[in-house]
Length: 129
Image 1: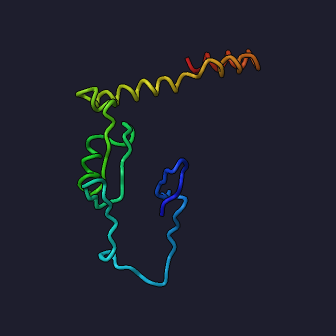
Image 2: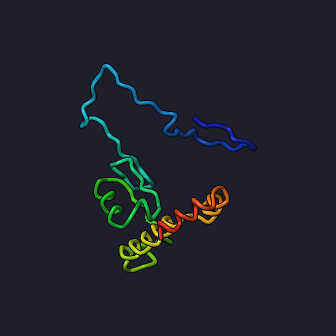
Image 3: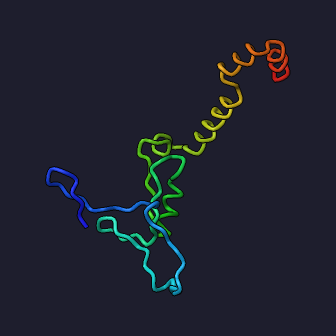
């Protein structure tokens, strides 16, 4: 079904997750009779799953696993896996740096605590050092 989008242009209607509801029915379907495959260009994918091109979502290993199951894992070509030959070691380094940043309280929180109660904030900072 075509929808007019203006200036004589038409588009096909698409559906998102919020537009579709799967409800139980009185009939039972045999899984062998159901085809969930989908085509992307000339490629038939057996599993309707697409992994996002984000380093935290798809690694080369998970992209390979998704491909073997029939899905598609998209790699971030500007991400950590293409920048470093030892990407796993770099992930450990980055996560340690992130953990250290999270351990130190942001300056605006420290200053607000100090303004509210200088003696309590001073004693807490001495305990954590």
